[in-house]
Length: 328
Image 1: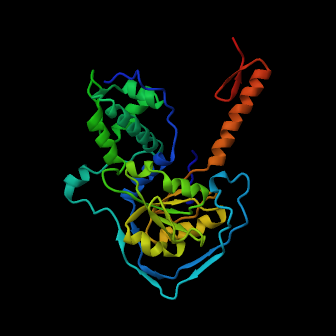
Image 2: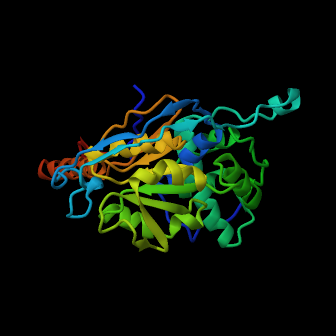
Image 3: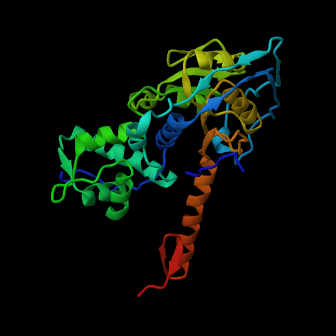
């Protein structure tokens, strides 16, 4: 999936070959790493000023932002009371040289995404009772080459055992710790239309360590109801509810025109990691990490490959990765 930020030894016979592709859970796991290291200092009084203006319906290309047929009403929130924001969300400073030596290495963004895929496959191996796995086997089922896999795992201090490979359980726990999954990551979802409703009702997030604990919308028909046991609150309550529930990650599934306003409220509430499903680039402060999931873009990429293959068939050529190649 596309990414955008608004800042300018076990046998694998039972394993299918799995491409190392991104998913919402992979995006969230990547955001989780950011939420560990982010420091948000807010020390000024602010008023809640939000204007969200929405058209009648999403455009056909805005697949990821499709919501309910009821258009979001224009919302202007002017708080009579200013909010005193002096809290700091930060990782405690390292103490002495020992803590500095134990400080985690910087991990490239692409490697972080692959670590989440390795974790998923290791979980399946563990469920099958596997105790060890070689780098070749793990690389095969995750769709990467062994050298790249070993390099990725070296970032978290795992180098395996020569002739044995990696112990599944210890490596799984290492990955969970590296991805910030060794403690709870609370998620808030803004926008519970068609897409948001599906995300809110999906139980896989909670089982992976990302429980959705807050839902927000502006539609009066949705505010006040429960989805998957969670009460839908009005978006104007984001600055109060998110800090109370220790929300670390926000998901935005609103129509495009409403996404920036929702993002601003999440940032104001101290949420520094955001997964954006709306087809728009969000403008955020430097310390806020944004991951973008645009389903229409993914469909357009697949359409490109379909068109190339049809062209290759007509011209008697083979298509490799979307490119026509002369048959030998």
